[in-house]
Length: 220
Image 1 (cartoon, rainbow, N blue to C red):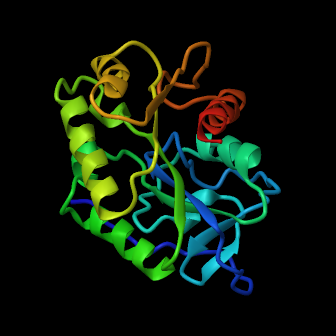
Image 2 (cartoon, rainbow, N blue to C red):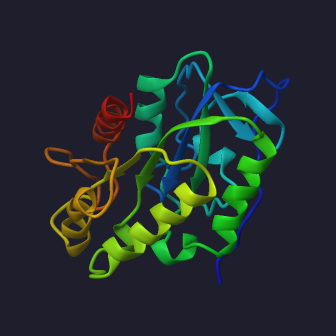
């Protein structure tokens, strides 16, 4: 039974609402737990106190966080470093070990994401950033499940681009991910080619940052 917790944001006064937002959804490779490093993100993140200046660890802003023992830099760190500017906002919706079925439409994590967006009010989604699949490595139905999720999110929010990243190594799920641009419109796939890991799952610091930069290039 998964335990879902309300995200805790860092202190500080509420910032003016950003004009454009990115919604980051995934598991531990996306937003690792507290790694003790500090990044100067030039954007805001939405947490319990509304919009605040984003700070590490970005997982603190997730409404569904499930901490892992991994304390390393995540893909979101590189993405935020590369893409953030004044007027940009991040919505973090990630938890360690997440299976795609845990965030399917009508689940509690899906409802919590829509609830957070309702709280924000007026916004323009620049892109959905999706990095998940380690929990579904050999799932032959992954592309159908992800397509259903994409269609539901677009119907319930906005028809925004969806940027999907491969997991490390060859797997059924990567084959499924590469099929996505042929299944629906406005999909981009980010390659994990050339990146390295600590444990055949979690990317090293340099690779996580590089992967975030790759996402940012497609998101701009």
